[in-house]
Image (cartoon, rainbow, N blue to C red):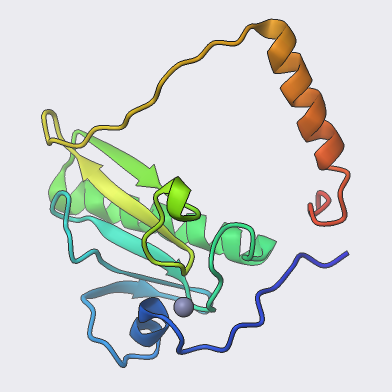
Length: 154
Ligand SMILES: [Zn+2]
């Protein structure tokens, strides 16, 4: 079964308008499927957003081809940021849904050069439910992977 493709028309959100050049952006890179531009917020110098050119709200609506293209573009940007800004580390962040921390409902991934004591923090509460619970979660996911909406391996 084909992966779900969002049928929303282009031009409906701020990133679509950036893709179309209707809103200016400091563009870093683009190819057939992706565009990379500077995040207005700039957590650190070199903070870039990599977005799909096609409007898709989140990871559930992009295609396998788009997901691969986004990661390839993110790697290009990361390698360039390493040269240009010499960060001590680098974080990739991709959020889906308001509860997931997504603020623009057009699929994008943050490439964030990182430095010691740069003020960025993540709240990551470890809950450690134990091996039996983890086996149960893994079984749930293995069963869910049989769903028609999960692409099979190429
Ligand atoms: Zn859009």
